[in-house]
Structure formats: C-alpha cells, structure tokens
Image (cartoon, rainbow, N blue to C red; front, side, top):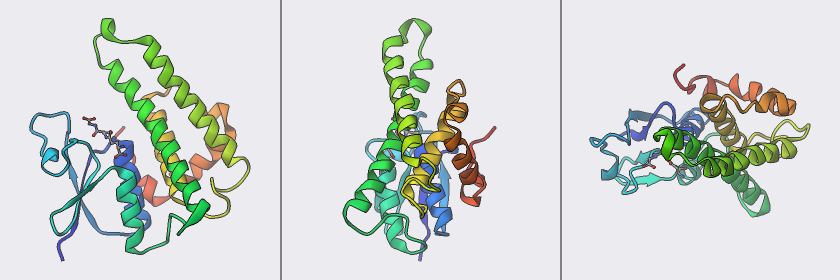
Length: 204
Ligand SMILES: N[C@@H](CCC(=O)N[C@@H](CS)C(=O)NCC(=O)O)C(=O)O
C-alpha cells in the first residue's frame, strides 16, 4: 500500500492540526512541504483552491480542508478524537470551528500586515483582533477548571485549540493570552509537552 501524503507547511496552523492528529493516532503519512504562495505550487493539481493542508490518498484522490481531513483520519483507527454522534460530536466539531476561526482571523491580520503600510486597513484588522480576543476568551470560559475542553477526555477540540493558541503566540505575540487566561496557560503547557505538539512546532 502506498503511503498517504500530506501537503503542508511548517507554519500553517491548519496543517499543524492534521499533523498533530496523525501523530496522536500514529498514522504513517509522508509530509510534502509546499509554498502555496509560489507560482510553482503543485497544490492546485490536488486542490483547486490551492490551499494547504491537502491530503493525497493512496488512490491518488485528495481531501482538503483540515476539518474534513481530521474527520477522515479519525476513522482510520487509534484513539477516537471525535465522539461518534449527537450533541457531543457537534460540540467537539463546533470547538474545532472556533479554533479554526481564531486561526482565520490571525492569518488575515498576518496577510494584511504584509501589504504596504498605506494599503493596510486598520478597521479590518481591529475587527479580526476582536474575533481573536473573543475566540480565546470563549475557549478559556469553556475550559474553566476542567482538564479538557469537553470534560475528562482529550478530543480533537483540544488539539485544534492548541494549534490556534500556539499560532497566535507565534505570529501575534503581542496578544498575551497566557497572562489574561491563566487556565489556558496551564492547558497549553500540557498540550505543548505532548510529543504530537513537540514534534510539530513551527521553526524558531
Ligand atoms: N479552512 C482551511 C484553511 C486552509 C488555509 O487557509 N491554509 C492557508 C495556509 S495557512 C493557505 O493555504 N492559504 C493559501 C491561500 O489562501 O491562497 C483548512 O482548515 O484547511
């Protein structure tokens, strides 16, 4: 059987979420690094949206959007990360969406800051900053003093939340969520110590 291939980068928080899930579930997968911003990107051959992560399956077909990929990986064995059905499942998926939404807003600011100063839109960036602050606050409230976002068991929600929090810390270090939300600081330290997170840190 040919190995699956994950087209990813070392800095994408969405790709990191997929890599963390692969590591947690000990699923073998080749990592192919691609720069989607380069005209030479081969990603459009597998994903018309030219976005990473994109998973190439062993039959040559592909899956994209990190939440679709993680849902598929969860069916391949290893410890289940998404509850099987009902509201429990919906809550985990909703938390994943919240975490991804924090990444979307952070990435929007990162991309806006790459434009010439004159073309940057402060109102647009403030709007995104509001989503990041409120999203992180939402995670902190939900976590409360519980070990994991959905109670006693670690789920995909926690892995997605970790990727979002670490992405904000990496790209927008002025957002000091650790001081503002000490419960998230302890939670993040616990996630960071897991081999799945330790092995997928973005380059310094
Ligand atoms: N919702 C998508 C977001 C993926 C995404 O936006 N990836 C970024 C890299 S961090 C990308 O490939 N951007 C290229 C582009 O938007 O053209 C997911 O969860 O996979």
